[in-house]
Length: 547
Image (cartoon, rainbow, N blue to C red; front, side):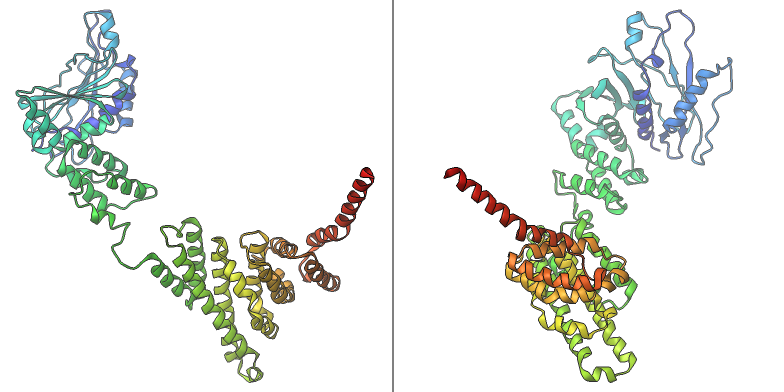
C-alpha cells in the first residue's frame, strides 16, 4: 500500500502561502495553553492522503475561530466520500518560543503523517532551522514510511517559500537522474538543497509521483495546464516514467481553446527526443505528402459542386471566414493557392458562357418550363460560385488578374440582357465587387483594364441596379456607388467626362433606379471648370508681378 501524501501537499501549500503570517504565529506571550486547530484529512483506500479543497479548509478554520470548542469536544465530522476510510486530523498548533522576536518571524510548519491501515498518531510540528531568510513560509512534507526515510531535500522557492521533504534515497535515485547524480557525488548524503525553484508546488507534487505505482492514473482529471507544468518539472528532474505518463495523457485528452498552442509549444521545447512525442504531434501535423494546396483545391471543388443550397451556403461562409482569420498564404503556398482559385474562376466562367449561349438561342424559348428552370438554376449557381471566389481573391488583395479576365468578357456582357434579371443579377454582383476593389485601391489593374471594365460592365450593372437594391438584402448601395465613382475618377479627364455624361442622361430619366454618382460628378466638375480657371488666374497673377 502506498503511504505517500503527494496530492495532499498541494492544497496545504496553497493555504499556507495565502494565509497571513499573523494567523500562524507560534508562541503565546501570556503563557496560556496553546490553541489547536483541527483540519479534517481523508484517507483513500489506496492509502493516499487527500486534503479537502481550499474553500472547505479555510471555512473550517474560520468556523473554529468564531466558535470556541469546549474541552473534550466532538471530533471533526467524517467525510461523506465513499473512498474515505478514516478521518484523522492534522493539528495547526501555536507554540511558545524563547523570544518574542522568533515567535514573530516563524510561520507554521506542518508534517503530514504516513497513511496506514491503522489510524496514525497525531502529527507533530517541528521547526525547521531558518538558514536563508528572516521570514519564510516553511513547510515540512513526508513521503512514504517516515520512519524509514534517510534523506532530506530542502527546496527554496520564490517569495520566501522553503519546503523540507523527508524522502528515501532509493526511490529518488531509481526515478530521477537529477537526484541519482546528486547522491553519487558524495557519500553519505543526508541532505540535498535545491535553490531558486521556479515552481515549488509542482516540484513537490512531482516528487510525490515517484512513490506512485501508476503515475498516469494520478493525472486523470488534472487540467492540461497543470500537466504541462508537471511535464516541465519531470524533464528537469530526469523522471522518464512521469514524462511518458504526461505525454500519454496529453495525447489522449481533448484540447480546448489555447491549450493546443501551449501543448505544442511545450512538446517542442523538450530537450530529449527519445520519448516518442510524434503520436502526440500527429494531432496537429500530418505526414501526408500532399501539399496543403491540393487539399484546399479539393475542398473548393466540393463546395462549388454542392447540390444542397443550405449546405453550400453554410460551407461557403465557413471557408471564407477561415480564410480571413487564418493566413493560409504562408510557407510559400501563396502562389499555389492563387492558381487554385483562378483555375476555379476560369471553370465557372466557361460554364457561364455556355449556359448563357444556351439560354440565348431561339429554340430555348420553345423548351419546357422544367428544362428552362434547370438552365437558370445552373446560371444562378455558377454566378454565385464566381462571386464567392471573387470575394476570396479580393479579400486577399489578389484580384488584379480577375479584374482583367472579367473586363474581357464582352460576349457574356452582350448576352446578359437576354437572361431574366432574377437569374442574372449575381453577375452584376461580381461586377459591383470588382468596382469596389478597384475603387478602394485593393487591386491595381492597368488603365486599359479599368477603362474596359467600365465600358463592358457598367451598363449591365445599371440595368440590374433596381433589382439589386430591392432583391439583395446584403447589397450595400453606398459602398458600390463609391467604388464605381472612384474607378471612373482614375481615368483621364476626357474618359471621365464621357462616362459621367452618359450616366447623367440615364440618371435624369430613371433616378434612383441607377447608381447615384453625384460625388464623382462633383469631382469631375471641379477638375473641368474650376481648377483650369484657378490655374490660369494664378499664372496671370505671377506674370503681372514679374512685368
